[in-house]
Image 1 (cartoon, rainbow, N blue to C red):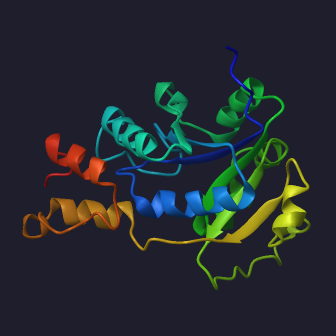
Image 2 (cartoon, helix red, strand yellow; image 1 turned 60 degrees about the vertical axis):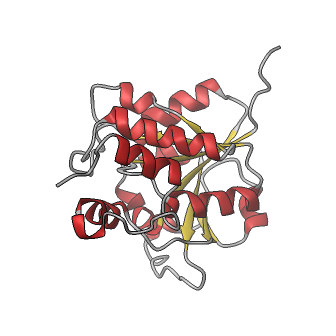
Length: 218
């Protein structure tokens, strides 16, 4: 039986070193709000703006796959791990759009990335291929609409946002988990905190994988 083409696709990329609930809870919340068919989790290989990852691509992909097995909304997309060059958003978007020509693509980013959007490589071409969804904390406001590039692109109105197939940016308030990969690595590297309960910030399957493979040891 032929696969039914996806009509709405969310994309969420990151180093995922390790992937945790701070990554996925806001995306799950917002995907339900805007009724997405699927969200692709895209582990980055050599992010142009980040230092090298702390564990291998193999392990980071495996941890993302464990999250996908727990949450049917998610599918791992490892195309960036297969590239032997820095991964740029425009390359990934062009490929996914070619594979799903009728789909509307929603690219998830956090507030920090939102602030940097005007400086992204080929950002105007990117905007022509997708909409951006910015996951923010309840009550959070971003005061940067004075920058000319954002004029006419940004909205907080979901109904208005969903009327467009591309070139719009939604500032959305979502559930948040207050944890970062840096904080998690610090906990995992600390012998004194080795038995600290972590199930409120990271999937138990991922914790087990980290322990089984002795990842993030000092």
